[in-house]
Image 1 (cartoon, helix red, strand yellow):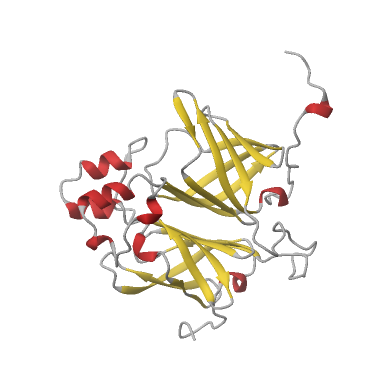
Image 2 (cartoon, helix red, strand yellow):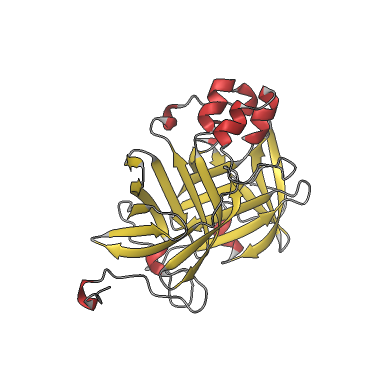
Length: 304
């Protein structure tokens, strides 16, 4: 094929020999377009991707999902409402980067494991981030979300708090009691919290969550399939607040977390019936100071 003129080739984020995600990718992104063979172009699904230093979270909700009724927990939902939740896509984990190819590793995934790895070739073009599938054929357009007074998320050269920088940190989590996986990530004024389902609840690779929920033997089994959380929120002076979630009962609530020793993290959460619970996590991987992930600075006794 003809060799392209370098002046006409869209710019690609530079490779990062340290393994860190390039600054071009950090921050909160909103998808504006998805195209794939045999399917109509999608411009209405509400898709947000929050990228930290390495950890990330991705939440994809069909148009109109934000109007789902707020409930205390999954036990308040009918079978029809559970079927609506199953239409979401959400996942979180770590991003690795080789040249212009990104690999999204899913530690937490609302949907069953996919048939192919989640990899895409990215480039910047006309103010957008363009992603093209490596193992599957698709194209996604992403636009960075900018809040008033907030510049693009960057780090100071020495990764220290600085007027020109923004807090960036993430942690991979493990719940010893159940074996669940979790992720907590912050990029500037945004954060995300993800909690996987109980690993005893097995979802076959390549299956459809909607079909699994529809075919569940009981409403209890359907709720168990959906007991997985990916939530996005904002860091405000009044606290950290969840603005969107795979679980309607979490939307609008305040997020509270506090440290336990050097590798422990407690998170105020909800059981499936809406009862408040405290989850005790072990940090299995961190990419930034833990203090940047804590709405509260105490290390003992919970929120103050």
